[in-house]
Length: 305
Image 1 (cartoon, one colour):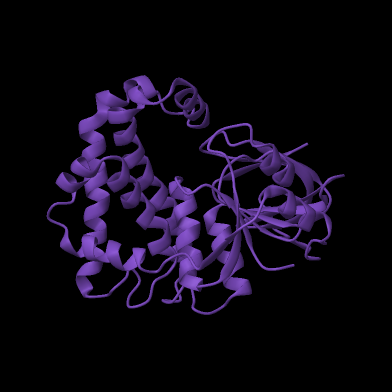
Image 2 (image 1 turned 180 degrees about the vertical axis):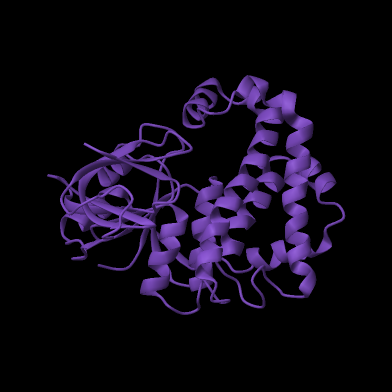
């Protein structure tokens, strides 16, 4: 095994979250480029049905969602820390706030650009973001602009204490989660973004500092090599069940895990870990052997089978 493998595509703001994490850690990592749209056969084979990116692989352990990717990188590469302030719980809670910030940006992009997207791409994203009526995004454009600016202004206020980053002098998880929202807007709608952020100089300077963190050192590999590595590996032998689990999950129980805010696919398997903010399931396939797919609990539904 040669360290982490990231399955992702660069145009995704969620991928950009993982890239900033890898930049903070300054590690060597391998990259499997996934398609922006289905078919995503290799990724689905690895995860068991989850199509979202980024996905981080260590051998036959597969980590879904940037908040859990952050926790695993922190465990394997403790320094430099992703939680320099020591407020791990608060920093993880702010991941959900950054999702709300992203949604404000997404609504603006949909209102101004979705009509010009290729039909197949638009239909795919309508399926993923099934809770959003793309045809009505333009009706709420004024409110979406106001919400985006309100979120951005919070960042400007946070940076007013003179810290280089949102948690102080060192970069951390919150920087990696928030930066891609502004990155997305500047890439998609530079003029609109410039208008909305025109009087937020601290935010602009912070953007530059986060961009300079880089992404560590990337080496491209093909999906076949990643799947072969899973086949040649064994999952970390980790079994941990919360005795007060809200769903009374037990080891070996068959469950289905899916995101609660988008349609990114479902994964079925046997429970190996059920903690307040982690659910891990074991599954097998002849091409990859036995793998364990790890999800955060926050933002994901677990259904017993």
